[in-house]
Amino acid sequence: MKIVVCIKQVPDTNEVKLDPVTNRLIRDGVPSIINHDDKAGIEAALQLRESLNDGSTVTVVCMGPPQADVALREALAMGCDDAYLLSAREFGGSDTCATAIIISAALKKIGYDLVITGRQAIDGDTAQVGPQIAENLGIPQVSYAEEVSIAGDVVTVKRQYEDRYHIIDVKTPCLLTALAELAEPRYMHAGLIIDAYEKDITVMGFEDLKDSINPDHIGLMGSPTRVVTSFGKMPKGAGTILNVDADEAVKAIIAKMEERHII
View 1 (spheres, rainbow, N blue to C red):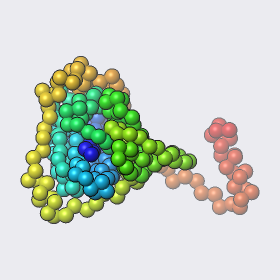
View 2 (cartoon, helix red, strand yellow):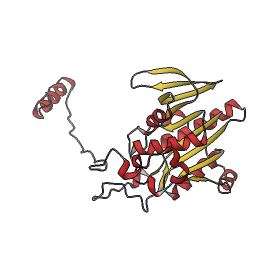
View 3 (tube, one colour):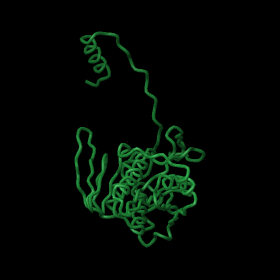
View 4 (cartoon, one colour):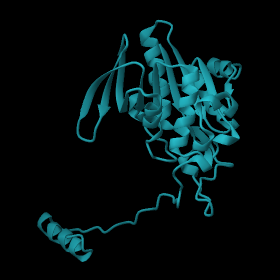
């Protein structure tokens, strides 16, 4: 089985800064990491490969600038078999729709039985790219995967909901979006880290994928959405502490809600 994991290199959330003019993230000089959900997807893929024990492979794919090479080498150091970097000037500024078009074109060239993506990226929080990839490829998808196993060509997924979960069987080829809870990423050993930097990473640019991509549908100009404004997480106030008994607390809470016209 060929398992492909799509990952994204994202800025460390402790260091996020926004350009007040362009409303885009300032990435220069900011530490980058593999998106948390994506890293869980890598670990899940490696565990599936080990459970199958039949010569299955795990391929990792990342779209980004040349420096995303670091994220791919970390994935190789975890145990992935090979890596692809999708990088070209034409890809710059792509929104989720355009990104999914580019990644889908690459996956068609690489080949796949099971595609795993993270549920969402911590820098965008849209949770759109994975499902859009599945739609572009015309394959079934299961999002919010909390547990996964494979028997033959059937993937069994425990899908998380807010108040319940579903157990879903889906035949390959298919796509899953992984929660961070899907798997705890393994530690990288020194030997695997050294091996990772001796492996070649295949770079795919626009010329490699142009037969499957309409240039009018990618990049900043080809993206159907625009960021109007961006803002960081605002600190919460200290709140109000009331030292009262239960009966008085109910009255006090209702009074506060009425004061703020909530009720």
